[in-house]
Length: 96
Image 1 (tube, rainbow, N blue to C red):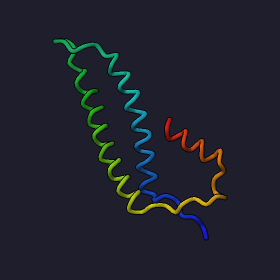
Image 2 (cartoon, rainbow, N blue to C red):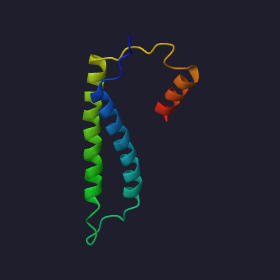
Image 3 (cartoon, rainbow, N blue to C red):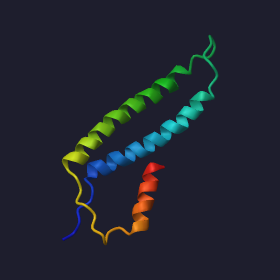
């Protein structure tokens, strides 16, 4: 019997979340370096609005991913699928 993997929708949303969260970290550092708004510099509002909108979109994607994940859980991995060091490294990677 072959083990079923994660639902494809969950995998796609997972990677969208991962890339988007990385983008949010980078964009937040960039936004903090922008000059404060003044009469001449009004462009600062757009990056902040974009950052906020992406963050809110990620919350919706996370809710969808969790719904699909709990509605269609994957088969539990067998002992042969993962060695102890692989399991520990997977936990550490997701924590990081």
